[in-house]
Image (cartoon, rainbow, N blue to C red; front, side, top):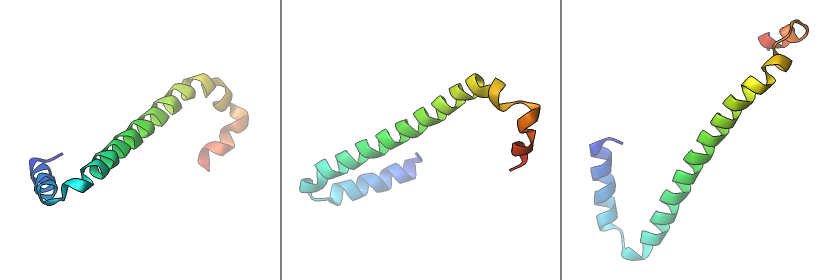
Length: 67
């Protein structure tokens, strides 16, 4: 994140009523978990590719490569 963005977010947090801090924290946790889940799905897909390479890469199914 760029320093300017961090500064703007800090300014907004400084003006936010304290009663919303837990909501903001929960939302940040949600975004971090969402990012982690996306990375995990990408990693699992990459790992699966090598396992299925022999099944997917064959002359019989070559026609599907252009879809």
